[in-house]
Length: 559
Image 1: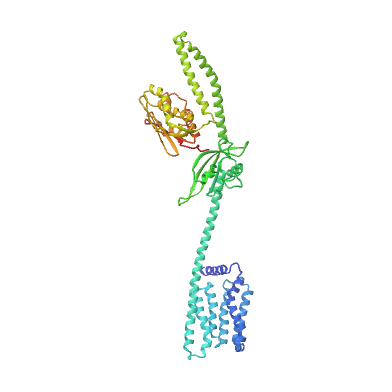
Image 2: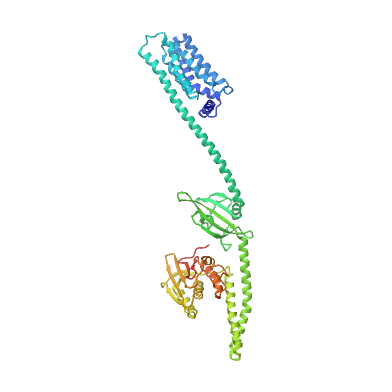
């Protein structure tokens, strides 16, 4: 088995040395260097050594070299055993011996030509012992005939040559053998690596197909991009999104693309598009955009996460698009229904209140019981009208804010003054720590409304004798207002849902605290329209803190 392996490696090794040539061309190329030297020597003989033309051995050696070159080219070696071509270097040794012994003493140095067949035999992959024996025996057989007749009267130079030249060819043989073994070992290693790479490539392709199948099976559009914005991976729904936005043939985030803001009319600038924000390193979720033009315009909720390399550098991003057109349209229809119903309620309620007010103006003519009942009607009608107003406001998708440089300290003072009567009824005290002036870029009417909601809630949910604290701090970019109470507090789950419309905690319902669950939702809408943020921190029995964050100066971000 080892012999077969060596034979295969030998043939493969020659193929690698000589590229895509067939075996006959390879044998010819191996024989060519020696043939060129012999040809040059044969051409020079009539001029340099004319007496050698009378030497039969010399002429026979020259002719044999020519025959071997022609044979190497003409014989179809691939039809024979893998080592059959090695007869050429063996016969080269015979031809060199004939030429050398026929040209002695004129060309005694022809023995050095034995290096060529020795190199060929050593590099051929034949058994190492055979090649080593031939590397010694070949030169000896070449030199012995010319030295035999002069033995024992050999000169020191001839004795030294006879002893050292075979050793030199043996050293050449060993060096080539070691190099060949090392080369074959590397070839085997490379072959194993090639096979492993082929397996890994096949596995990678299978995984790529699996990934593509999984991505195409999802109902969201997914795209992975590099730092320059070129797509690395995109599923079929992402390609549909690209066609809808006119980005099928352009780089993501660049060029003219039909991606609109929440008003469905204003084109988003390139730096505000989801992929542009993603490759800039932003991480976001629930970023609503509209793609395409009417009537086929679609709403997409987008999210992005950065791709970070092992060394911590940003290499790209993954962006996910969820088609939420149906949800947005359903929400709009729901808001329209609430708005219409609220509007229809206002007219009869105003009529009821107007007539009750007229009757109560002549309260002296009413019996105490009738006056008491009319006051109940008036109070509940006013409460119902306030609820209808909140419903109308919360359903408005076109809430406008008109920000300007506003002193928040004065708004806080006004809000505390407006809530003083409500606080006095429950013995609630106020603690304010707000520097004056405290400038922010805000709509004073809307922020005043938001503060009134928060302060009113803080009073309503605090026990008798509680404290409502209002504090503020600012930086060059942002102003933060905090409204803190000492009330019943909320669980973390309730804190996460407190800004949803109509949400009320179970403890608030159990305590029969009045409200419709709309005030905080309205407050959140107002703050977000300013480009700010509102958060809630609360623990059961420890009170609640609401934090408003507003821009200190300049227009708020446009989304």
